[in-house]
Image 1 (cartoon, rainbow, N blue to C red):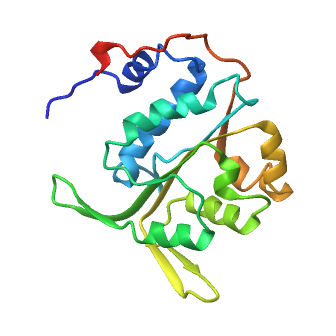
Image 2 (image 1 turned 30 degrees about the vertical axis):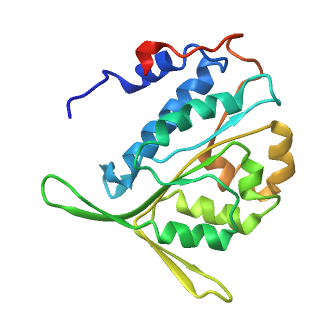
Length: 219
């Protein structure tokens, strides 16, 4: 299939131009879409380290005004038809790890190389609904998974052990400053989980769109 767009991010900003979220929100949602599509299949070898394109992005702002949910809805309309595995609902940590471990796929590249990986994106319009409140262990798991270990093992008291082969986790969520303070324990701030998150803050919408009609050229 021939390429349909030039630069994806520029095209996405054009696609979302007739919406109310600010440019900053729309840019970072676009970046998260790119990460979700690349999965673990794209990486950069840098000396002894390997860097993957996963991002932990949290749109942050007061309720209503900056249109966090609208920004995410535009991104979801792009991700939904793609072969991208999404977490969208509240799950227990054990169920979350189970689903991640069972998402294993085998990707074959043009050179014949095979890659086993468990690549998933968390898509949550309310971060605190997904992670819960003061859930230190779950936050520690998310922090550890950010590093995309080749093998990541999780042991439970009653359900045995889950093994994630080729871990890769991407996060796009939204919240308010007050919810960050209420939900994250002190140890998550400054180090650990919060140090891996890009908190994208805005307190105003980009513009007011009283009639957000869809451009026929964009269908």
